[in-house]
Image (cartoon, one colour):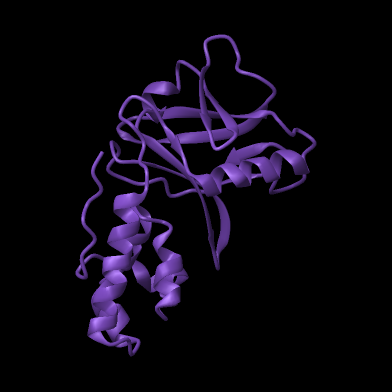
Length: 195
């Protein structure tokens, strides 16, 4: 799957949705509005230049973001993809909840033509009928009913000034996942869940 070219007229928020790891590159170049609410209205090049970053430096930053986007693996149409950072986060949460070595079960509840509602929880092994995917030393299980909605999805872990959590992005839905999924967060209930 080919990544879309990142251009200076794209909104910062759209760039972050498409290439979540680009936040680190932007911050390295002095653009710190990656977690600002204005980034959904501000074009990348204009926003960077309005913060005093020289145009040639902005162009270099965009080149670096495109290099990252091109090198970054994406989900195949007939599967899912879990980023290395998400896999490390899954391992950390599993250890914290005394479920080291367990897999992460992801479910998707249909929501008409909109983005499904996702759920996550640890599961010791794949259940009957579950499809198992292995990434970076962790297993992810998806049941038959959820699989069609998750094919082509990428699971990442995102940290920002507003919080952190798992983010599922699937280009087949026009609206990106707006909620975050957090393992072990909230009310001591344990497990992983999207909210």
